[in-house]
Length: 397
Image (tube, rainbow, N blue to C red; front, side, top):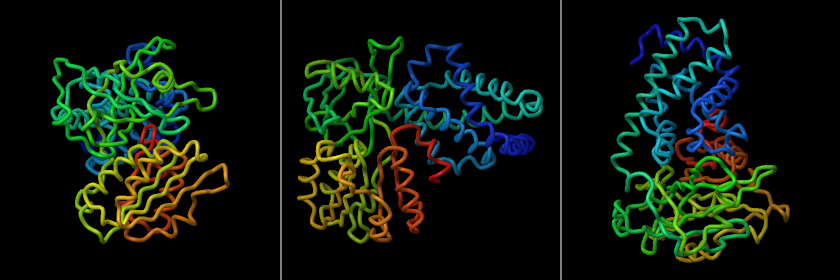
């Protein structure tokens, strides 16, 4: 536990972090990658270019500063980040490197304002915060379904939509000795792919959600081709264009805490509301499948938005699942036809409800703000955005 003096000093820096936080984290990443280019093998280049990673880290540092005396209140956020760390194979020895360049960035940006007392306090605070992550991730490593990155063979590749490819993979015989029948996947989890793109000097790791937790035929995940604006997604385009049936790929064990409330799955009083847009349907579909398999009597409200019918992902699979349920409402929105998912639909949702949301950052912000603005309990709204989750925290939670 940090000393009372450290807590007081760190909390006093909150206004400065609110003003300069993103500048500090931008300098941090620039300096750290210059000194340790090998770490570019871990971090998502697109999130760096779009500023998402910088915003997420700034938000995390700010939240830690505000709650340094009660870090336990940040456990949900810390847990989500730790799942991603474990999936990326971030280890305890990485934390001193991050600490060195984060503290250096604070000093560089704030200059003389970052006096010895402030820097000493933040050094102690960082050690405290890092230890929380290290200890939590230690338990996750002990529970991971296989160690590190294992080799899998692609046995099926299909088009789930115009811009979404669905993959089924099985483990290749290796020292990990992975037995599909013994894997206990959870609907809502993601796997992490490690690739060596020909257009990059670094390895590239990306998280992709499971569209089914059933492992009878293999592990199932989906990938959207990422060509936003001027960015050309290294990994997504490689997986779409180059990875074929019979090829192999490296995956780390499934991770993530975006999961259905197990107690509510077996009851019929509180309806399940599943809201997604675009490729955000992927973990939501796995949840639908799990719910219908466990208890088809539970009321389900399915809400999906996408560009048009050609971008309507997993339509056949969703229709099959919904046909197995006994109490279903379905709402589909095609943006090209002027159909907008807004508060008009959200206002019709029952309360209480068990709500799960997944999509782009803008979509997430709009839906979450709409739900909470209509008095849906924060505890009843669960979400998994694509990108660093903490970049949404200040606005959504």
